[in-house]
Image (cartoon, rainbow, N blue to C red):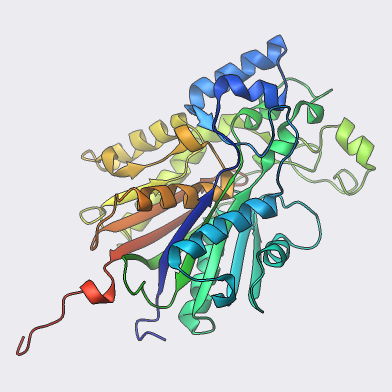
Length: 383
């Protein structure tokens, strides 16, 4: 192991199923072309700013792939980018909101489809921030010296549960329909190692910070239960499936009234990292941020400018408008695109930022671009 006991991102991959779907192409796939639903859809799309996204659905709304397949395709792209095979991995950390099956765990299903040899497998189940939780876990094992190389993937396929059949009989309230026009499918992956790539630049993982504020906030984004909090006897596991479906327990709901509060809480977490010296704004070159809507981005910018009037928003990168909101996959999909677009140069720093509304949690990761060993300057004799 390296004496620095750190970890490096050395391979990057993503997979977005099917062709890009513009705003006019959503209803043919998901349904919901009645007058009330159409009005809600147009309002949501106007605020989120998403112009195209991808679905693992055909033009008739029929599923074309499994979530585990999306994950494996992103992983294979990342492995190819690094120039290694699945047999070279010793750990696989997978993040998703909902796998294809209740059991086995998503990580085991991805490993079974990916192949490779024996390896440690982790499933980080949550919402958007779980991908950085998976990254943190894999990095910890590398830093401990338990594994020389790992892969991390965030993958989502919510479109199956966004089709009209899930909403028949559900009230046309914004909490039920908001995420229907927000979420889409995709997967993003990275390869993590104890040393940098031998011939190409890498991203050194300096730290990961993940904090939950669930002790201070109620459930905001939910599925599988009646109301805002689980009650004994009133979750999807306590009643028959038909009753759960009829009562809308399988609809993914979002309380949109808390978006302002989520932005403010995220700004406070960002300020805490600045105040404690984890982030040096004078040396922060890039921010890759996952946010669900352009409205959330604008709230965040306004709040940070109160603290940092000279904030340069050109340093903030998001591909929300063209790739959509893919939940746990979003931050890795954006990082892969920014990396392969050549936005980063050796010596520069990158901050990954992921807010999660489900019950208010925030994840950040700080990275430094490093040149390959063959290009790094060596001290001259006598220096």
